[in-house]
Amino acid sequence: ESDGPNAAITSKFGENTRAIAAINGSYFDVDLLMPVTYVKDEGKVLCNVTTDGSYRCNGMFMIKDKKGRKVDIVGVHSLGTAKAAKGWREAIISGPVLIEEGQAVEYEDDGTRLYRKFYTTRHPRTLLGYTADGWLYFIVVDGRFPGQGEGMSIHELTVLCESLGLYEALNCDGGGSSTIWTKDDGVINHPYDNKKFDHEGERVVPNVIICK
Image (cartoon, rainbow, N blue to C red; front, side, top):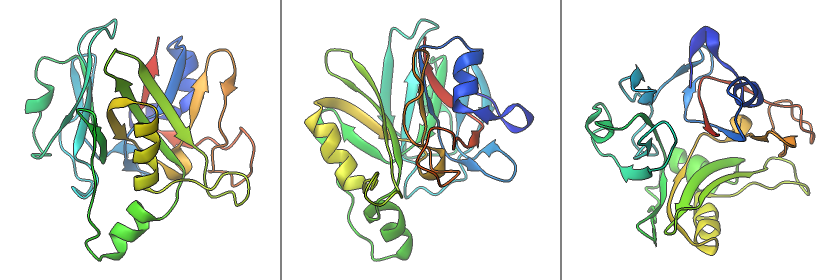
């Protein structure tokens, strides 16, 4: 994870860290390229507050040690604190939580345009999750390409997680940020930021989640 002047496209983060795979991380200020959610990297807090709306930032993904042998996704309700990340090497707030302890999390329509735009409209999406037996999933859904990649609503994304048997799952930043990269195949989805159905439209982001 990084920020500001050190921000980069997801594939570059993956290459520079010699990762096996990488996905884009959480929400950020697109002008300043700074995170707007809590971020902790290698034990160092890079952003200690969450200014993005609580309507979606209600979960934290955490990694316990350098080798990533223990991960967790927990609900967070006090978004300005780091209590949930205490004792964890890596942590990032995002959301909404999709699956919690094997159960789908449903969100009621509050009647606002903000809810409809984010929750019920289909968009490119990024999520991470894991199964009860320890398999970690990086998932990206293409969107905004009619007839080629339609995107998903939050409910549809949750149904996908259920079909894969995920025990915990957390939505990450989506839209033009959604990117998945692997060491062997490069960018394998169709990032929307250049509005072309190719593999070249990556957006510069301040943080990513990698697998080594």
